[in-house]
Length: 261
Image 1 (spheres, rainbow, N blue to C red):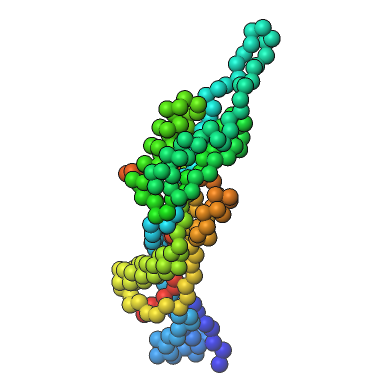
Image 2 (cartoon, rainbow, N blue to C red; image 1 turned 180 degrees about the vertical axis):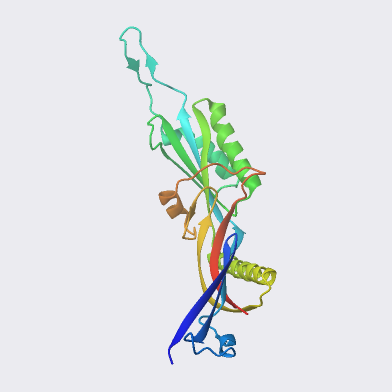
């Protein structure tokens, strides 16, 4: 006896999620149909629901590096006699910031202070101040000392240029964020299934990924080495009290599929 397979699909949608139901029936060819056979339904595929879940975890930074730029107050001057610019007699030297370095070290708020020539301007210097277990208060204190000490001498116009953070607890925050994302996905699935009059079954598929952020910077690798972050990163902004906390965060997103009944 020839048979015809009929499929019926019902899609129920909501923001960020979709329920897909599929049923099928095997029917005799027209002319030989038995009314009882029309009620026989067999499942063609598992009924499933797909959702997304998000998790975010943060941990205090274990180390920070604060960058300052010092632009010399001695600028080229225009000579009316020659009609040309007269360059300053002295180009800024790293030793010119020694008093500022001494003040930072003496205060015990930084364990390492490095001064180098400016990357883009020969009339500027750059200072990188490193500290362990940074807090907003300690960052504020470093800024005050680094700016006020140099400003008082009148040689430079100092500006906070950026800050970066690292952590030694990558596995911990990754695990926490991942667990939060999986739990969030299941809660979304339970709520959506219940709202649709269905019962949630087991997990049939899951995929996910993570990204880290640490005040203006982001990437897929956990920031653990301050030298690498300074070398390859681009410090943006400056954290002060009441704004961005000195911490490293990780976001984990999962996409999960559950069976439904």
